[in-house]
Image (cartoon, rainbow, N blue to C red; front, side, top):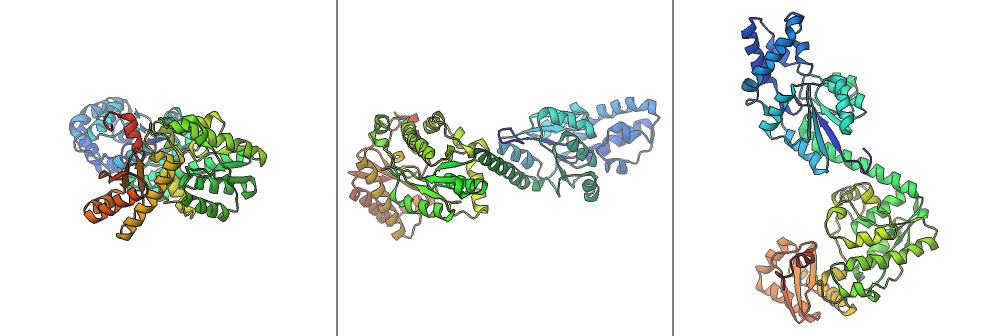
Length: 485
């Protein structure tokens, strides 16, 4: 799977997603009763995987097999579908693929209409279904659908995966033993599908980290737009791993919109990696579009940043300016800053590798980066309601108010992770984590102290938002201005 390719995972059906044995055995008994032939139902049910005519061949003349298979398929819906249950972890395995933005293809030797009955009866979330294919014959379907992983329980499923060039993941819920599956060449062996979501999380993360490393190596050298947040910190660390500190630099732009409290930690982090930290001044406040603070304010902020960092990268002999935009940012709705950066040629290695915010944090934790659980820290201008002009005075007032509010909460024994003071003009609205806001609102003295702190910081009026902290809450006002007048 390449970084930009969608994840496609193939699954077998019988004894991988469903326990077919009771229904299969009952249908065999019905067929045996009609034909008067004694079948070893237990042995046949324990060897699910090969086509039915292969299983019946020892018991019936060859010329009768086609008709017997047709009869079995006709009996099957009424006898076998309703009692057949999903194996443990089946729904969760399919959901894990969807959670990673992937699609699923069900590739089975079962008669296609009967396979569809099981899918519908159990509510399996699959995108494509291909029946009546077995062993290496599954490879054609897997290749056509672009599957890079195939999950099955039988040695013949391993054969299909290997023939397709897909990763073979085997579960020990079918008739093949661990030794047989290893001998067949399976890549991954799981006890059951209960283990699949965790395995897939690690697999996807590993694939995307490898893509990130390869991307950065191709870049040759980078100047990382380094805010000090989790994303840009991880990108900086990844760049050092891929390129070496001598071919990487970090740039933290100093302006009124960057809180003073962010500057020293950013410097310390860059220093811990042995990376040069450049601290150019940016002057977004001189851009009328930025001061106007319409919905596209971030466009003008990012334009100013990249217009400064581009020449700086050239000056220091660095081939690219890279931002910490991740895969979630690209689908998060209105993001004019991303457009401004793209127009100016900034590269987005995390996005290009498909890394989400959660994956950035997980990888950061694994690498021992102190920023792995750092709360999001948007610029101070994001606290000012759209339509209210951004000014140095307003930004300083917000910064004072947030520091004062944290001090009040700490004094009351409430350490908070997320805290924002929203500047609504002549009024401030304080947002904190939901558990903290509930505790604070339950104490009139704490609420009073918070309001007083915000007023002392320069706001004529202030209040505590009972809905708590919500990332991007200012966008609610942009989307529904009448509600927030």
